[in-house]
Image (cartoon, rainbow, N blue to C red; front, side, top):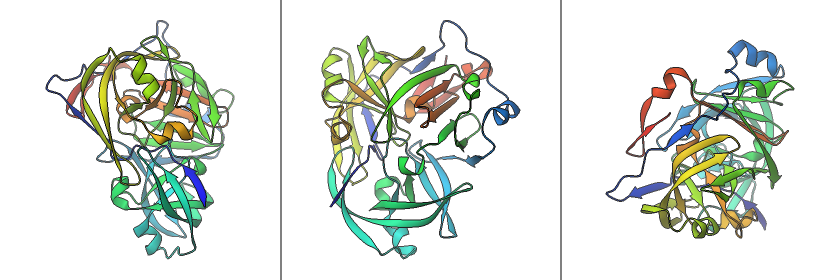
Length: 335
C-alpha cells in the first residue's frame, strides 16, 4: 500500500471569542523594493511558454482553476501548494470512468486514512498536458465541493505566480534570470518531499519553518510553536476539517509579528493543531507554521519558484494600501 503525504487544511474554520483579534496588516520593509513590473516587462522576463489561468476565489477564500481531463471539462480544481498529490473527487473519477484503482494511505491535516488512487491520463492545465500517476480519490464535500485539488506533483519544476490583484495564476518553466525584479521580497527555501519550506522566518522572535499553503484557509502552527508562544493572546478555538473529512480542534492565538525575510505581517491569527502533516514533513520537533490564505492574500502577488527554491512576495501599493476588506468576519486593513 502506498503512503501519500498531503499537507491540506481543507474547509478550515476559526471560531473567535467575543473579543475580536487585532486586524492583520502587512508592513513594508525599511527600504522600498523595486516598482512592480508592468505586464509587458513580466512577459519579457519569463520564458516564452507561460500559461495565464483565470482564478476564482471560492467560498473558503482559496483559488480554483479550470482543468480538462481526456478532453472533457473544464473542471474546477483548487490550487493547493501544500499538497504533495493532485486529488480527484470520487464523483469526477466515476464520471470519467477511471476504474483502474489501487489502495493507499492519505495523510491530511487531522488524520491518516486509507483511500483509493487512480491514474489520470491527459490532464491539461492551461497548455500543459501531463499524466497524473497516482491521484487519491476523496469525497467532493471534503474539498469544498471542488472537482479536485491541484497538488505539487503537477507543479514541480514550475514557477507559480499567484496574482491576487488581477485574479490570475501564471505557470511557467522558471522565473528567468531577471524574473525576481518585480518583487519586493525574495526568500530562499529548501525542498522536502516536493514541498518548499522557508527557514528564514521568525514569529515574535522565534525561529520558525514556514510552508506556503494555498489550500489552507488560515494559518496553522504545530505544538512546538504553540509552546513557544503560550503567553500570546488566545482568541478562541479553531475547528478544521481535513481532506479525509476528519475534524481536528485546537486553540487560536494572536502572534504580534511574522517576519519573512524583510516582509512583516502584524497580528497573525494562528490555529494550533497536533497534525500528522508536520510529522510527515519532519517538522514535529521544531516550531513550524502552515501559512494560509488569510495572510497570503494580504500581498499583491506571491510567486513560488520550485525550480530555484525561492518564494517571492510583492507588497500592495498606492491605493491598495488604503483598501479595506472583510476576512472571516473581521476587518482587515493593509498598511
